Image (cartoon, one colour):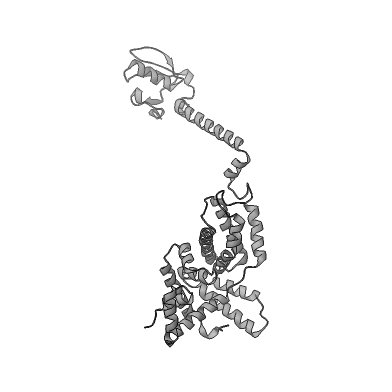
Length: 185
Length: 175
């Protein structure tokens, strides 16, 4: 019984179990076909190994020198990792500063959105309602909205403008946002 | 330059143990010495920066060979798009100046073998390089490639059969 090519290839590589190795070895002495296959595989393996090259010692030393330089403390690491190693105090301070600036920006963007109020000079404007003829300078949209929320004013109100009206206000006071002040062009 | 606090081996010990086989494997994928050096260095830097301890030098060896092999094939994939692999082989052959008839025949054989190996499918080429140049056994190759030992045996056999078909037998000389 002949062995398959995979078994013979493994035999060539000395990868068979000892018992099977001996069986194949004994078989090869009496089987020219299997011996031919072994010779062919051996020939291919020898030719492949012919192209093998030895690693020169200076190659190993050269790479080690470069490697030692790259893996020394503080080298070969990414920028932030290296920065933290060099000056952790500075990096922590900068981080807090960044967070503070970010927080302040967020705060002002939420509570001071009158910056986009569609008037060039808010101090010259005022409004009054029929029920509460109060004059409140429209220097802050939030004040106007807060007033209506507190006093439960009707929705309709008029705004006294220095010039001809060029905008309309849409929506419930409670839900008014800066985007509800639509310019009327 | 220790690998880790709990390790009983140093980075230098790993380097000394692994570099020769790593370089051979990478070189036979790339066929360029300087690039092979760079890729080996890159693999060791990744190993150093990994900071996750490996239980033994052997495990480190498998890890490094796996990473370097992938780096090499990725590089080759990029490189093949730019240049013709056959031209590279020819240029490399010109560098060597054999002085005797035997050396001429040997160099011709090596050139043909390299070309045949380079044209093998990646999965067969990988096992062949690890086996013939890396001198690793089936068990080690299986661990590096995350496949079974039986699969390694099959791939190596098929690689040899394919290689035998690819080689132009009339032009080769067995030494």
